[in-house]
Length: 221
Image (cartoon, rainbow, N blue to C red):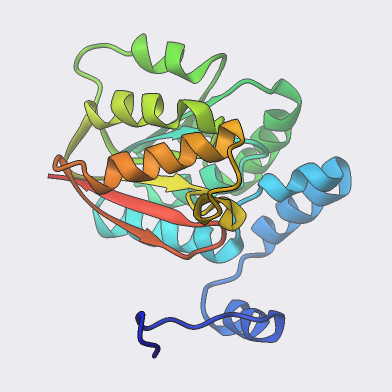
């Protein structure tokens, strides 16, 4: 507890403790993460953290999500977490532009037995979202793609989200750069603008959590 609020700083040993006891591990997800690191090297940093995947699945289950959308699929870790949380007749729409990375995702979805719940659309996500039929709606969404389009993705998804539905947005702390005003790079400026927008958006109830690289959870009112 400090004068500014209540929080705890994680060092590596405390983080390892949390991972060992603070979320439900999964052998297939661990294998997927390991293959991603082995094949893609530094790009594997785009994987979500394991505890984040567990949190996402818990939230999807908690609201009884049946229809979900993801913008930015990479090698399929987050999609696998969400798809497993959907009922057998649920559906997850995944939007990505990279065929090589999502080929890895497809293999693990098949192995997990959830491939039938997932539709992968390769192409610009804004085009995919804007081409959806007028009646398409979502219970749950995850945005984790190009930062300069975060606000565009958010708006397209929010108008298709049912009241009480959740929109989760990744990387909102951006390695701490959002609080460093000396950093005026395009992505950092875009994330700052997005964070300011959501904080003032009265269409949602939102909270930003220090999970992994920062996770915003917005509930449509």
